[in-house]
Image (cartoon, rainbow, N blue to C red):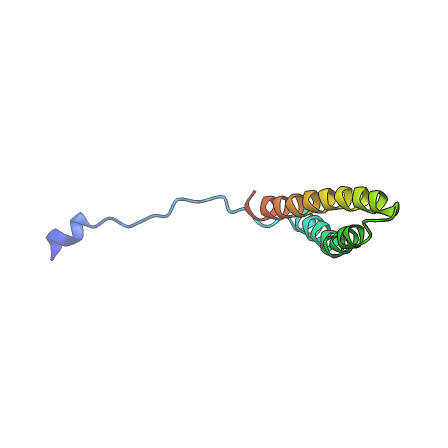
Length: 90
């Protein structure tokens, strides 16, 4: 038994620096996603409305507005997800 006891060494864990979630950054990302969700529904409605009224002049106004709003929605969605990931894994 003494032979085995001399060969065993205690296992020591290295101290790791544990990072915590940045709550302010997390709230910022959730706010961006909260803004993007209604904007996503609204832009879908605007684009549908623009394509239903092909014979009238507001087609071009609503189509331009819908495309710009959809671009803003996609930007907010990706930026919000990126911000949340940064707050969790930074």
